[in-house]
Image (cartoon, rainbow, N blue to C red; front, side, top):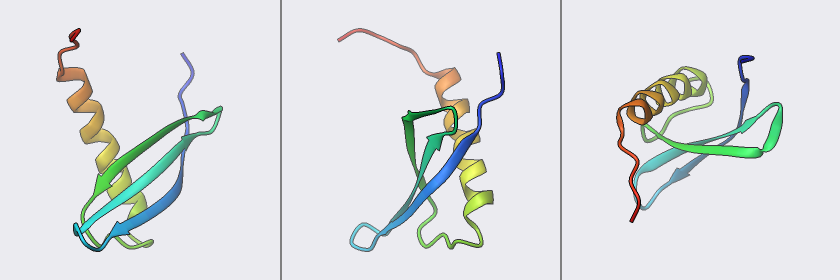
Length: 70
């Protein structure tokens, strides 16, 4: 399986909830998108490192989760 590349396409800050979010799009399939929470106030200078940590944390959580039917 080829290694996927995801591109950071957005950074937003929710001032009321004091949360920040990063948005990704897969380079080889623009229909695939992902949004993850970042530490509040993450700046453009910090986004690549914070986004990498968020993706790693998300991947770890997904490998440990159980899938169930309603």
